[in-house]
Image (cartoon, rainbow, N blue to C red; front, side):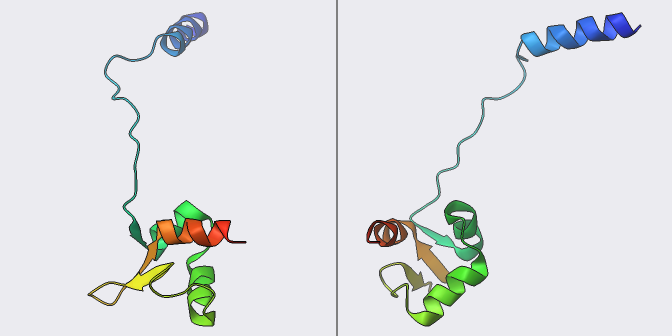
Amino acid sequence: MNAEFSALAATRLEQPSQTMPPPAALVPTRYVLLPLAALVTGYTVKAMERKIERGDWVEGRVWRRAPDGRVLIDLVGYQKWVESA
């Protein structure tokens, strides 16, 4: 039974499944909420909030406030900020 399992496992590993969909790629929009920006940039939400509070990130360049009051990070502005260092 163990040999049968090993042979089956080896076969499955060698041949990709025909039923699996191709991997998906997510492309975020230009403006993202802080939790998604944390995943994209590597900064924590708290670290980004501190940069905004201290004025390290300028409103209208790196971040802006949405009509509902939530903070959005401009990924293009963030990239320019990174490259300015």
